[in-house]
Image (cartoon, rainbow over all chains, first blue to last red; front, side, top):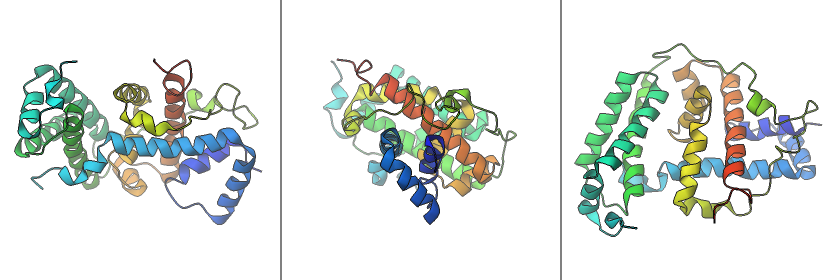
Amino acid sequence: MIKCREATRKMSEELERPLTLGEQLSLKAHLLMCRPCRNFRRQAAFLRQSMRAYAGTPEEDERDPSQ
Amino acid sequence: MANPDVFAGGISSTAGALNDPQFVEDLRRRMVRFATLQLSDPSLAEDAVQEAFIGALRGSGSFAGRAAYRSWVFGILRHKIADQLRAQTRYAAAPVEDAEPDPASDGLFEPDGHWTREAAPADWGDPQAALRDEQFWRVFEACLDHLPGHQARVFMMREFVELESTEICRAVGISTSNLNVSLHRARLRLRGCLEQHWFSEEATPS
């Protein structure tokens, strides 16, 4: 049974690589029981989204016209 | 608030922003700091920032205000840095490993691996609204600035420059597991900082 520390590590890694089936299952089982970790997962996704917004990624087609 | 370039369109808004020395200086300083952190070479960083400004002057986009202009110029810099980092293999400084314990992120958990009571992530409700709030971005930048140098560097490479993990490992000269440790810590710290300074009832201004 994984604990919160390990679960957050997996949730961070899931943004970097596909988790193995075993990892997905143990994470899913943990999330069913742990509200703070469910919050963490949404927040990690929000961090990525806000970094993209900060970087102005939606205006991608307006970037460096000299390229 | 007198901020005419929000309402002006096209080239005049760009010129308006560029004619404000304070705006340009703040922007330049922020870009140099970011580029120096990413490239760990001050003169390469200066070059990249200059090239980004030249690229911006050549362009004639229309911008809904300074924030849009800022993210556009930053976007040009971002692409220059991505090219530079992809071209370099452990270019400048010796790699900084994040193998040391990091009390600020490790201390969020009890020895048994559960969240401490204070650190357990709260429900942020609908955080999307914050993305349209100029104040939020100030808090966001402050939280980014608060990350330890190495964590900030690889986190920004991943989420802002948008390099793949493998590209970052090659550019910085670290292992994948080392990168994952740093990204994990950076995410823990950042979400904690945002919760403390924005997404908690005590933090919300107004």
